[in-house]
Amino acid sequence: MNIELLLKYIGGKVTDQERETITSWLDQSPENMKEYLRLRKIQDITIWHEPTFTNAAQPPIKKTKVFSLKRTILEALKIAAVMLLAFVGFRYVYPVKQVLSPIVMQTLHVPAGQRAELTLTDGTKVWLNAKTTLTFPNQFSGQFREVKMDGEGYFNVTSNKSKPFIVKTEKYDVRVLGTQFNLMAYSGKGIFETSLIEGAVEVMKPGSEKGISIKPDERIYLNNNQLITAPITHRNHFLWKDGIISFDNESFPDMVRKLELYFDLAINVKNDRFRDYRCTGKFRTKDGVEHILKVLQINNNFRFKIDDKLNIITIE
Image 1 (cartoon, one colour):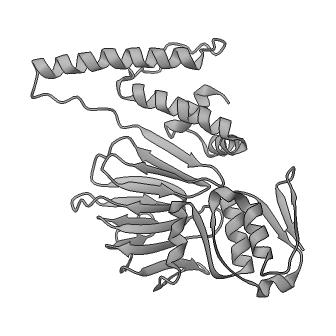
Image 2: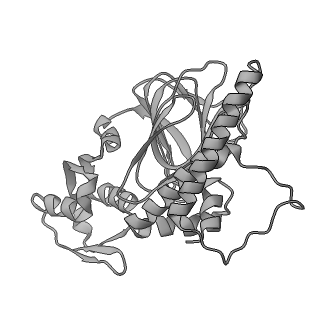
């Protein structure tokens, strides 16, 4: 993968087509994800002191020159050490001054079958489910704390009444002050659901000043292009942030859709009688979809076969 393109992705400056290309590449193998994470660590070390060039002054990039990862890391550490000394000296001479870092947007993508956990600069903790992309700044400034998410996330937001926290998704924005909630909003899937654990949230259309508020133990979800408010019925669903997929008397079609979403594959169900099946059980995500189906076979009479080349599972 082109390093320049990966750096653009980390900085949140790629096009939709470039983002799709990179996320597909990340899903191909754990080695690709490791390469991405190594590059991101290097970027995090150097990002706050990178010089800003205008288009006229920016030196040309030599695409033919390839640097080894080891050499890049050493150079980054050297620069970081020098800048740290300069920063300490600056603070000693001018103790009332403050060095401000440039605001840079960063992107984290979680591949299929995996999950991630991170803490934002305001102390907010975020758990990200499989096939989820989160775009966030290296620091919050201005009137709001804004992030953008495509997928599913569990948020434990640090309270700040003067600066609301906003999660922007494809269809709706979720605004909070300090609370815990689960948000599912996969673009292109017609899925939007917010479940409030504690605190308060407000769901609104992008650009609106007011929306629909819900209370703890309530959820709001999209159904036939309408937002519906109802009690939370399956709290075990939130175990996904601990690496557990839970089915609580779930219909077979709903179970199939969830597996397709989390493991990024297609499941072809050839027999309509499976629509009457109900599925219950807890499974570790790391055990994989094949293990889940084998366990479900014990109480449900079906067979399945896997086509690894086409990434399709057929249930008959």
